[in-house]
Amino acid sequence: MTSRKPVPGLDNICVYCGSGSGHDPAYVEAAREFGRILAKNGVGLVYGGGNLGLMGEIARTVLHEGGHVTGIIPSFLSEREHMLLDVQELHVVEDMHQRKRLMFLKSDAFVAFPGGLGTLEEFVEQLTWSQLGRHNKPIVLANIEGFWDPLLTLFKRMQGETFIRPGLELRLELVDRVTDILPVITRAIKSAEPEAAITAKF
Image (cartoon, rainbow, N blue to C red; front, side, top):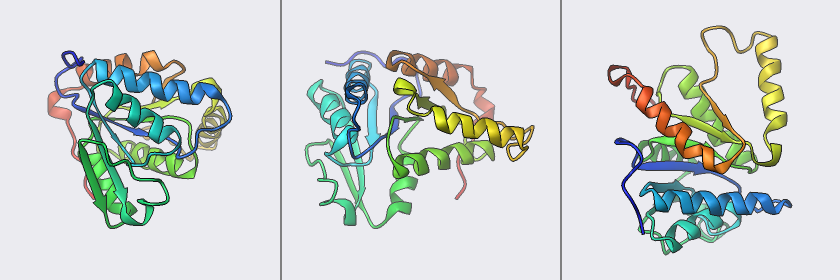
């Protein structure tokens, strides 16, 4: 069962997360909780297309709750990550570059849950594009149980060393609770100036 979307222009949220589940049960519960939130609010999930780990948990939850899921997966990962065939929209692409481009084009905001190198790489790429003015879609870091604290410490070090210079600040929303993700994205979209909308250039 779905309800009216929380804000016009928010049709799909891209979630980056691990193809593993991690040791802390809080990660799995967070993925499931956000899946329920997406379905309840009529916001579609865009994700990496797998059926393993946190990826599988959030996608299956959205589907179980009657929501819409778009999976995007490179052909070489279709067996390794156990491609989820039950989604409403499935794209099997040639490589990682096509996957990331299509995930960007189909999403209105991005959220990073706990994960590994792939999660980190995809999230940081969106953060870099935003930093360089290539798009202004909201980016949220879901810091479940402090998982991303070491990364935040690194960001502070980069700022202190002026590798992240004034004028190139990170456009990043940080949340500790899953229930804060959608309100943060909603506020960011509502506060954006229409004339300032930017489409990424590749």
